[in-house]
Amino acid sequence: MSVSKLKKAALALASTALLMTSSHVWADKVLNMRQGVTEVSKDIYGLHMIILWICVILAVGVFGAMIYSMFKHRKSQGAVAATFHENHKLEVVWTVIPFIILIGMAIPATKSLLKLEDTSNADLTVKVTGYQWKWNYEYIDGPAQGVKYFSNLSSTHNDARQLKSGMNPAEVENYLLDVDNRLVLPVGKKVRFLVTSNDVIHAWWVPDFAVKKDAIPGYINETWARADEVGTFRGQCAELCGKDHGFMPIVVDVLSEADYNQWASAKKVAAEAEAAAAASTKDWSMAELMAKGEKVYNTSCAACHQANGEGLGPFPALKGGAIVNGPASGHVGIVLKGKNAMPPFGAQLNDLDLAAVITYERNSWGNDAGIVQPKDVKAAR
Image (cartoon, rainbow, N blue to C red):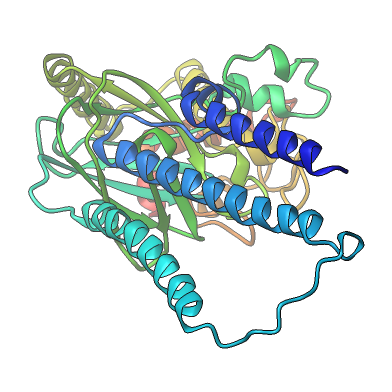
């Protein structure tokens, strides 16, 4: 390659780099990370772009000089290697310049890191607990204080992921990124998240918030976010927490303050009604328990035992199973306290939900083993 062609190639490379630098659209639409909707996420995006282009400029400069030198001063052109060494000026230059570059990157990175870890003066605190394989949200203070609920993978998405479901996952909107109960937050409010786990290690990750925090049993980690925009934002568990770690999506609805207060009031009323129903001493009919039990089963049990009750892997079939067709006390005890790979549901579901799902399991798929009432579950706790 002649020197003139080398110059043209170097010019083309430099032009491409300049085009990439000025074209944020190219970076945003194709390969780049998202900016997010919080101050911290935008800071991190800006830091990422600064470092990216520093690296691009260094790469173009260093490799350009190397390539030019190799062709310009090659042996066939009569070039003779220099014999000097210990050039103190050159050594000072190549030491000082990298030091200045590192300091230039460290200052904004440190500012972003300090801001990321500052959970003080929060307007609202939400406790996030990871379970196999769902999330539990509990509002510690604010208008929704005392409200807590589980957030599971949407039943439609859960059905679509099953083998031989007859559903095309490509036709399911936001496949594996939708839930039955979304986390709801007010816009413009600093929310502190207390993140922990009930069983194995999970990671609560919402890219638009620039939040990714490990959920570890026995520990409580803190993080925070303040969304600047109303909207729906999605994430998922980012830890290898078990065979179903890919089925723990996170969906956050950010509402205006008025809409959030309205949601909090409605949620508290619904929670009180549900608690009153669970504490009732009435005997529920088979139809009532079966209807409620099917919903609880599809939310909490179908992922392991399958919707048709035929079981999967270490989870035995419920269809015609010895436990669900045996004495009710044994069935209630296993659901309450767990056994082997099956987690205990005593702390996750109230007496009514447990009685309903046990009754559903004992009277579905050809089983016919009678009713279990909430008072039976209460007595077995």
